Image 1: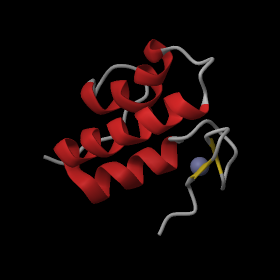
Image 2 (image 1 turned 45 degrees about the horizontal axis):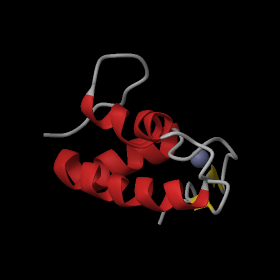
Image 3 (image 1 turned 90 degrees about the horizontal axis):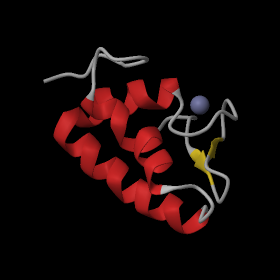
Image 4 (image 1 turned 45 degrees about the vertical axis):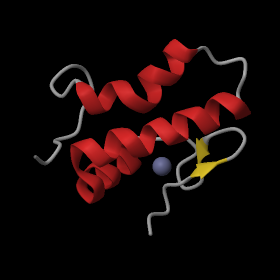
Length: 82
Ligand SMILES: [Zn+2]
């Protein structure tokens, strides 16, 4: 498994301490899961993160966990298979 996993309740990456999902985590998840499973997987994480970080708005959580899976080509994105 990846070293790039979320440390709760801060949701910083265990390996690189950046906000999870960090770039390496995104690439690994996208490669392992594919686009559809990826969104479902991250939505589950988004819900857990929302419980751990009540001060973070739903919009911020969406941007962090889900937006990058839906908008390849805008900003920082990884190449998603499929
Ligand atoms: Zn990381």
